[in-house]
Length: 509
Image 1 (cartoon, rainbow, N blue to C red):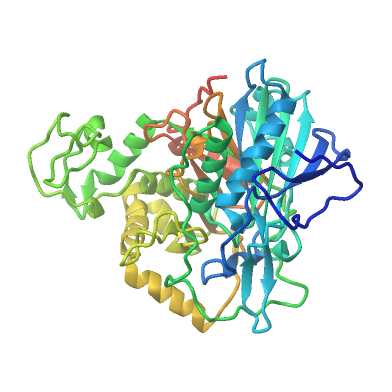
Image 2: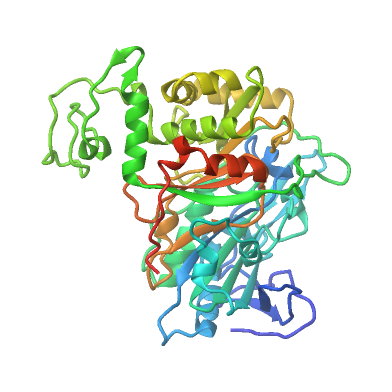
């Protein structure tokens, strides 16, 4: 291991990279009331990249005006025999080996004379920060029943960095922060390099490498011969793109927990009548079980030994999902809290993974962005005057309709008019749902147990930005990270229709 103390970080990779971990550190202090930076390093891939330059796709390019993704995990303190210095060294080594599998994250952007933007996999390395906040406890971070404390944003680097800056900044970074009784590992990744699927694939692999996993479960697919690859050129404004929302707007942020039982109640409300026909809602075990090829609902492990209902035709697209039901309830409650005019058009946007929607399907481990936004629009009057089933049905219809033809139509539309993605809530009546409760966030076991909680930094947060996480206990539970204007947040906190489904969560700490 090479350690060099200097006043500036060296950001170019050595001429030859062996299987040894290379990084360059310098020591400094961060002007902050909560977190003190102990060291900063550039960590290089353990092995040289053999991946050719990757052209940014139709799904990557619109994200150049977005902040870097910032997501991290709160963990209990490692065993006493494993000091924080040991942890830092272990994380550096495992990050170096993980970057060898994900060389795009150790590269930089470059723009060709034709205007195309590429990820150059040149082994320039990623930033790694070790920090201390020993006066902060796990309980301080979790703050159950309260707003997410702003100090969480200090657990990440590259705060408010716009993705276009990947031309001269690292495309990813990791910060590990020692707390009084725990550790926070925050990961920051350029949003034009990854979507949520690719982000958590990298994070999971990083955790597996740290914990000593003998074999990496899935390798990323860097192929670019997909429908998203395009010769279209995105016009870049002078000075580079900027975010399309007011990042300084006063906001509140809370994490609301929805148990398995609460989610099932919501699902039952939305499915008790579908297309005007009364339906029978099966019990909890059947709802959460798997559907086998012959139409029988099994106990969830696919062996057919669980409770079996009468054999019948089963069309999953006819059923409004748990998540659509929860989203519809949020849409109703936020619309009510905003006191919108009944004629005002409201929009609920959901980011969807297109990998499995295309024909033929893309590799599920395709590395990059493969997402599109599905907008559902309705008047505030309809959202509030009609029942939950109606709102959920609008969301459900649009999600089911987003098939191969719709994905390709969206790509063609963008190619005819290349443009940046307009994040934000310009009309005061929009909600944007990101992330997914299906992402394996709690699989990030770095060697001493699964995370206590998942939290995000200040990136891409505006009035109406919602991020969905799986609940820690699993089994279909969901956490919603809700960012709203203060008066709107107060409104949903006092909305009995919404709060009846919210419960406190045991973090096991």
